[in-house]
Image (cartoon, rainbow, N blue to C red; front, side, top):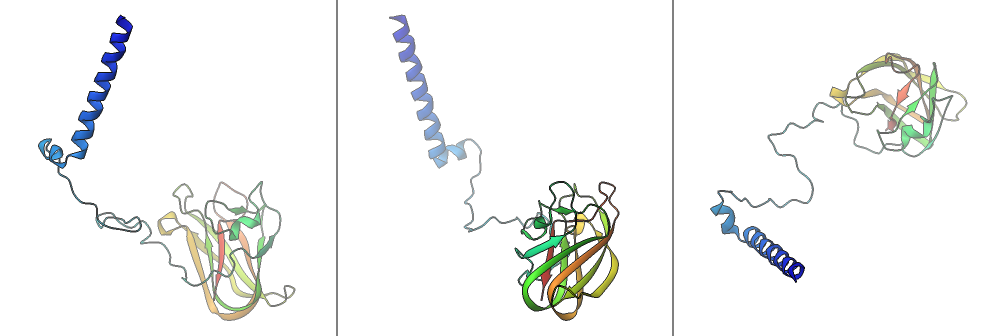
Length: 203
């Protein structure tokens, strides 16, 4: 008998608490009584950053907004480290990456047809965990995949998470179907090879 009474009391208490909480939250005046100021959320269709918060990408190196011709195209390289295969450099994601096994390291992208190109972008993961480093890169092009000509000599580029861990290589427009990036140095002490999360090609 006592057990039934206890259960009934518990049910009454739970129901009372539930009703009280619901009344408090559903009645705007209750917030005012509690000293809480309510505001109406702005209408928006996507997440927006309040003006008082700086844009973390404001200092990123800008890459062209046109189509990335390398995305998803056939790609080849030499030996790579562990699971960091060449297919990672044009999958559209910066949380996957390619890492060569030693130098020089070549990465060749077949654009599937000839294009007038003028920019190659190389990205690393923009996270600060990927500390600043320098890589030496040359760019070669070909129309047949056999004979390549160098359009940008080996140059040292600084990758810095403060600027998006990306670099942009611009050159005069040139016709090419095959684009090859040749890496010859990486200053990072964490690896003995080249690294790239994305290699992008633009007209």
